[in-house]
Amino acid sequence: MITYLILRNPGHNRVYYHQSEKLALAELKIAALAMDQDCSDIQPQVIAGISYLSFSVDTELSAVNLAILARLSFIFALFVQQDEGAAVTLVPLEIPSYEYIDPKISSLLKYSGKTNEIFTRMMINVALLSSGYDLSQKIQLLDPVAGKGTSLYEAAISGFNATGVEIDRNLAHETTVFFKKYLEREKYKHSLVKNRVYNGSGTKESYVQHFEYAATKEEFKTESTRKTLDIIAGTALHSKRYFKDEKFHLIVGDLPYGIAHGNVANKKHGSKTRSPSELLLTCLPDWYKILKEQGALVLAWNTFVLPRLELVKLLEQNGFKVLKSSPYDEFTHRVDQSIKRDIVVALKVS
View (cartoon, helix red, strand yellow):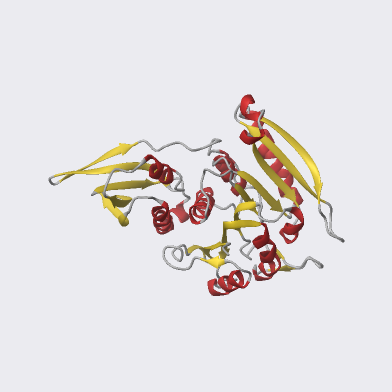
């Protein structure tokens, strides 16, 4: 048996880092399910006072499986363990690079209430690993509650095409300005076009800021090698009006926690509520339609305002298959006194 050890990213904020081992372990178990080598003894391990996550395989990891490990949200360094009598030697291994743009983009913005970018990266990775898709497809990701765009930037880092819907027009504008300045500063070839999209009666005009970009001029010349990032100043309640059926491989969203922000849950009246259940009652049928078959929906939310069993019931009533067993039920963690966060993973399967 060969034992590998993963050193976790120290970039978590102080509060989140203390609970991140549990989340990292669950993500690693999901990654192991996607690998074509059997992994055993997936567990925390402490060596010389340093905490690692370890696992064992019968043979050396293949390039394909190393690429899966490279995309783990928490990975900072990878080692293979060599035991020589009583001595333990850790030999560092090179982690394959996958980033299309510099990961620093997600950490540049600092603001109150921002979701940790490593947590967002974990949600996207869990969605991809759980779906029926892989990197051979040109992945399309939607965040229907995009905020200031952390999920969009994380999707761009992975080379995915990203779309975000944000009801706060000021935030949508800030996201557009920030991403445009980033592309200009980093010298990416790009274009930006603003177009109208559907707006229902009694609502403000909805519009999309459509970016096309590429790392080089040659890549930008060809549609198949250009990347896209869309920011819709609108509402998730109109998702079916914005998008065609089965457009997205992944839908990933961090629902408002019902503390500082409510959810607009009624198409006609725009009323707000602390619980995301009313928002989901309205949106889930449309999200199901615009998600591809074998696509994955991953949502984070505050269980204090919506118990997990109620959310699972809502998803199943709208046709989703919820992944309930271990390790998918191991993501619950406390953020602060008023927020106990969890994530749910659901698939669209016939």
